[in-house]
Image (cartoon, rainbow, N blue to C red; front, side):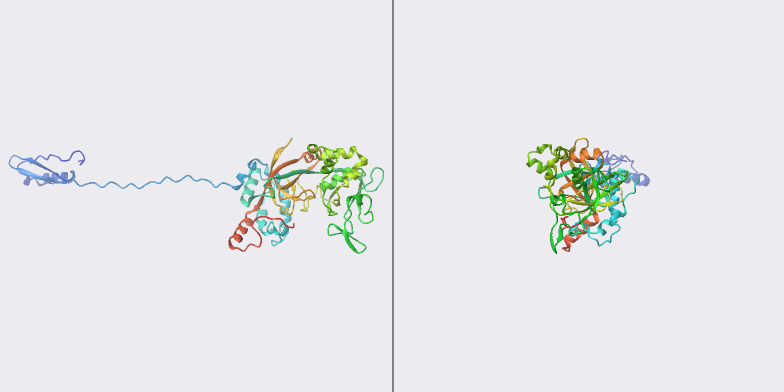
Length: 436
């Protein structure tokens, strides 16, 4: 019987209630389930029996609270801040990165990376290099690899996060092993009297090395070997600017020339010289316009080129392809020249630069594998485009504003964080300039 149907229930009985114990037991059970504190009077044929009905409250059933779990939000990857990171064809960077890793893995763990150890030690990079994906890895696998092993750190210079990005290429010249006919412009190897990059010992004293004008006048004919003779002084000049290239010889062979040393004098941009002379409008300056002016003014070309006192010496290489300052073969579109005072050679860099006509926005992962006399500043890059007419065209036109992030191994980032927290850091936590 449901005790909630009424406040009390009428119970009918006969005059012999005491003689019906089973029935009374049923009545008592019913009364026990009746709501509390209700008293009623019932008339029997012979007497009135007062029955007290007590309602016992039924305690509510405790229902355990069901907590709805908060939605799980996956952690935001720091790589999400890199524009175009998810669209870059990252497998293309593997050849360049593998060359850097092969070089690093040959060194001791204690070997410093970058100037003053700005890039940590080889030990900080070893695990990441040992885990490099194989050549068959797709873009997604390479992306996951870099996200697992590295942390992006924005490069910031005196002028903020943005800087200038230019391009360079691998020139192809025509030459000969001997001086004859049209082959009369020498390409020199490292001079025997070159000391510490910019000095020469003359008459027992160390002096600044010869300038371009002095070298062009024949000042070191007896002190440096001539590797080859080429047919064009302007092409020889641009070979120096690019730092490496190939020469097709008149015996149908090809020689690869790579950077060996410089005379140590500061680099002066020829574009600036021609702007100051009123020869080229600032908006029209490019590799192509500079070369065209020099070729069109043969009598003035050498004096103008002499305004840049910097001079480069070469070495022959058996490897196919241009070498960078890191000592590895450069990868077209994925190797970049940087200022080693601020970026350790071998560092992966994600570049976000303005669109170049025919290429679009330059948003790609590159490896810092080279340097250059004109590459100065914390946010400054020179992208290697490789050999051929298309590379020449892109390199000559590239003058974009942009920024980049340095990819620092997590092992290095975590170590520096611990050192900073305990006050045991041997140097500041942020990446700083220092010798390669």
